[in-house]
Image 1: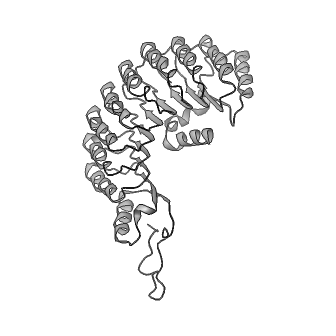
Image 2 (image 1 turned 45 degrees about the vertical axis):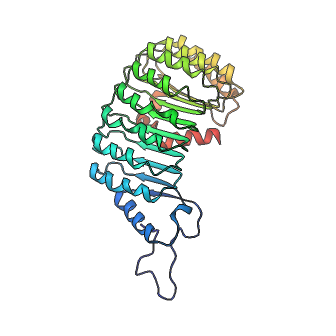
Image 3 (image 1 turned 180 degrees about the vertical axis):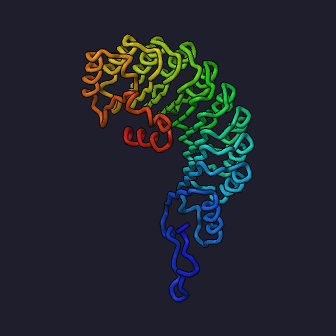
Amino acid sequence: MGCFPSKEEAKPQKKEKPEWEGKTLLDLVFKSPTEFNDFINNLIKSPIDSKSFLRSVDLQFDNLELNEYIVSLFSKNFQKIPKILKLAISLTNNDLFDDGVKMLWFSFEPLAHLSSLSLDLRKTKISDQGLKNFSQSLAALPNLEQLSVSLAQNKTSNEGVLNLVKSLNVCPIISEVNLNLEETNLGDEGLGFIREKVFPIKTLKTIVLGFENNAITDVGFCGLANAIGGVKDLEVLAINISKNKLTNQSIKALLENVKKLPKLRCFILHASQTQFTKEGFEKINECLKTLINNLNEFFLEYDKDAIPDEAFKQKIDKLMKLINAKRAIIYEASAVEKHLDLQYSKELRMDIIRRTIS
């Protein structure tokens, strides 16, 4: 894959060294399982100690028609790089089904040093059953600080959410949780599981939640919103509640609790195609006034036509400009509609968070 010299390039009188030799830390990206497997096979034949230089591995295996067998082949190689710190796996739009995903869970056991794990499993045809063993994999990762899991557009439900979050408290230093549950039949019961299992974690500083296009009501969301106010060390909060049957009651509960977060630096809210009215969004003014000295970034998406009052929009804009921020942007739904599928991708999430807390 370019990291190792070919036989033709190697000269007897001057043996070429691998590109990575001498480097203490390296971040590598692979576009196919074959590329990754070949790298590992060459790595174990090298006299260089892989544990001393390989920091992160990013496997971008989207749209490759992968199956359970192929997943087993590349995932078993994780045991050969046990000291990597960051692992990102993107398997979007592959027919993995439950058995394929289970292969992943068991492959994480040797990665005790892992501090960051990102799993993009959108459109992989997994169900609640496929998430049953996820908690076991977390128990093998005592140094995990960042967890990102996208299950969008899968056949999961509230039970799957419970399987996903029930053992997060076994990670003693976890500070960032990113859950994308867009179009997963998520309901109020699932929000209750997130409220009970995620928000009590004392070390949390970043929470990113994607709930777009589900069956959430005011009952479930208000319960979750009331728990947010208790996460006192929270610095970054991003929530996508678009395309749910939520009323002003939900946004009021959310904003009342956001005001209780003294360390919040970034607040991102996607709230298009809900039942919020001007009265509900008026709460944003109060919220911004409370947090104006702390926020570095405020990020709002809403339906432009739903609130035609220009004076109201100008009022929000004025407050936004007063925020001592790196950026202050209002995203209108009409302007970002074509990008909605990417809102909680790993790349965009990390871009938002990095430029906010750097």
